[in-house]
Every structure is written in structure tokens, then in C-alpha cells.
Image 1: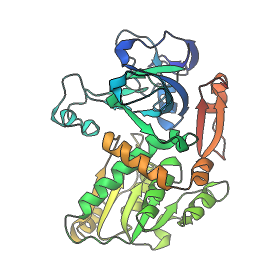
Image 2: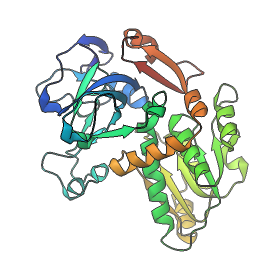
Image 3: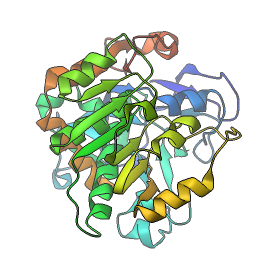
Image 4: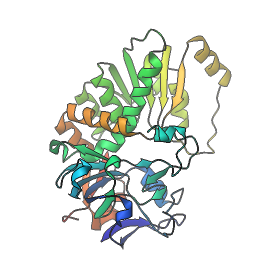
Length: 350
């Protein structure tokens, strides 16, 4: 069968390969792959910045944002042929740390977890794949067109869960949220903020294309100006770009008792002038919290399903700017200015 692969550590080794059928050892449920979403993580793996093949394999099948349909499942799995499913990306380490053993593998303490399409497990960019029932989340058939957005949504479901938990350390009545970046992650951050009834402001540098209208149609406010020029004081701040200068600007916008969540992964080595004393002074005197978050566990997948189900399907569909057949994978990786989310179709159309 066909799969999109790389040779980890070898830059630009992206290829459409013929690979073996998934063995039963990968899971008791056989899934027909429908599509995968592409993101910056995939691009970085293709560039050989990181990525790790499964033991004994020279290739890594890409694809962590996924959607599939059950082809075969045992009666005791809780799943049936035809069910729409998403595979959970991260799996606990073989001898779980305390966090993994508790089902909080997104908070793994020893780093021995594995991740589909990223670290030690083949991904979902293949025509068929397998998983055990506990590694699958079932979706309503009505989400067929947009279910591939679930994995990025889970990242924000976790972020908002932790923001809510931190906020409840004391009196907590947030009103204004700021999101930096209007890519898929930023737009999902904004969606979940609007669903919570907050006044949401999204900052991005583009002034045309689909992003400003997508933000407006959420009922949020789009900003293309320099972040500090807005004079906003936000109760919740979610950073989705990883750009160091944006992060520094964001840390100046918090209201008293604000919570700032960093989701964007920065490149290392960048240096910019920074008044760390001023940032520390403000954080201490305002009771601010700044934290980072990555990945998601099953609870966040279920929260993500609920968020997608409550969202406008037409709006979600507009996030998917291109659907590209698997055979045209190089076109899918060629970024276009109007792209928000590019999806690679794995089925017969591919």
C-alpha cells in the first residue's frame, strides 16, 4: 500500500513509498485512512530537524493529524465497521511513568513516550493503519468533512482546560482573551474562547486572504497592528506563533491576575533585547501566570470533539484551504499565501 515517508535525519527525503500492510501488532482495529492534515511539525521533520523511525525501520510514515474509517473491529472493541475515528497521536512509554500510567501521557515525565508520525511510531499518512480501541476516538458522521481538524483542536482543548484550572486558584472572571497567530491553532484557540463567551482578539500580520474574515465570522476581532499598539489588557493570552518578538510583546499585555499560555514552539538561537527585570516585576506584582503546553490526552480529544460539534460546520470547512490527492503530495507541501490548513486525501481520490 502507499504511504508518505521520510528517512529521519535525511533532509528532503519525502517520498511516496510502497509499504507493508499494518501488522496486527500495531492494534486490533483496522482503519482505512481518509486524510491527514499537514502542519509545521511535518515540514520540520521533512527538513530533518527531528523525527524518529520505529525500531527496526529506516523509514518513518508521516502524518499525525488524521481521520479514518473503521474497516475491521472485534465485537468487544466498542467500534463497528464504518465508524469515523481519529487516532490519538501520543502513546505512553512501554514502562509508564506515573503520569503516563494515569492516562496523562501528554505530561510524560521521562520522555520515553512515542508519537505517531513523529517519534518512534509510524504515522497515519498511509492507506490503512491499525490501533487498539483505547487509542481511537469516535466522531459523529456529521464531522466527516472536518474531523481531520480534531488533533489541532485537542492542543487548544488542553490549553483552555489548564487556563481554567489555573484561573480557579483565586477569584476568576475572565472577560478578554488575546490570541497571537491566525493559523489553524490560533483560530481554534479563538473558537474555544468565543465558545466560552469571551471577548476574543486575534493578532496576525496579514491584511488580506481568508484569515481576517474567518476571525470576524467567529465574532472575534482581527488585528494586524503591532501588538502593544492595541493597548489591550487581556485576562487570557494564548501564543500560537513561537516568534520570540511576539512572545515578548504578549507578556506585556496581561491584566492583573492574567494567565498566559505558550503553545508555539520557537526555533532556538534567536536573540532579542529583553528587559527580564521588567517582565519579572510585572509578573510578580500582577500575580500573572505564564505556562507552556504541548500535546493532549484522551480527555482533550473528547473535549475537542465537543468543540467541533458545537462549531459552525461551514466555518470549519473554510479552515481547510486545499484538499490534495496523496499522489500530489509535493503540491500539498508547497505553501501558498492563502493557505490555512492543507489536507492530504488518502482514499481512492488520492
